[in-house]
Image (tube, rainbow, N blue to C red; front, side, top):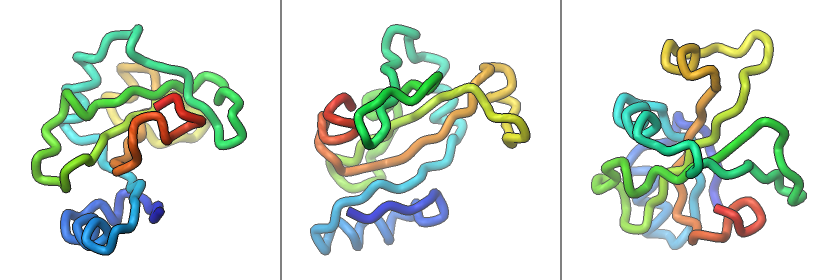
Length: 121
């Protein structure tokens, strides 16, 4: 499994990983399409974010946006996950984050549903 920030969220890089049968979890920009999907998301669709040790991340929630955003340019089975949490002091926020009151971060992955965050996402 390769994990990188959004600087590596390029189609060629991700396709090379898929071609080499390497799993990926890559930071993904919070684009206009993502912000639009977040505006459509229902509050009850957000789930508590789970740390790698299985505990809940205080004040953080996740949602899958795969069915809402167009991912057709990415390899088959690519999923888009978004996390929101209250910003820490000094966090750089977009106007969208300021109006929503949360800091949003996203990533794309080829992990199967249930394989992330202790089987919850």
